[in-house]
Image (cartoon, rainbow, N blue to C red; front, top):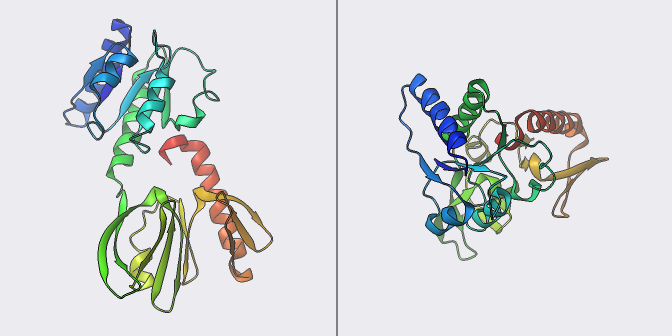
Length: 244
């Protein structure tokens, strides 16, 4: 993990609390430290850590600005802001922070944050597919769960719609759906549709309006089921924030 904090006392305090929590779980933790956003970015390499803890009120480049730079190459890295102010939620929204730790730091809150990080890192991050081309050839591909919008099954083919395009794979829908994490983010609707509820803008009549503009019709018999799943997902997202 990487800690970017310009106050040595706060840097030491956070490191001690993280190490205490790791020791209580009989784990070791590797921590790296930087005192400024500029120094951190000069040395940072993508995929080099499991989590980034950034003080928002850094001198020079602030933590939000540094996080924006990180997001250019690592859109899914857990970013946890530390701050003595509570008024940065709107300004930091676009970098999708995973959590906030408000100073003065407390063991209980750091422990809760670390537990959520363990849970987050233990989930599978992608689904392995054998993509079928128009000529019948199959190529292995890993599709990140967070990029999946929805998937539809018809005639033994599953079209997986993602932020990067559509992948086609030939397998049973049951086997395909069984690979999704049970976090509430994905809803299996009937025997042929999987929906990423985090990509749903709203439910209107018997249709799902996605954030990218797509409209998915849902069977009338499944409307209550999908509505309930969406409501539960919204509650989970509100409670867990970026960890959901």
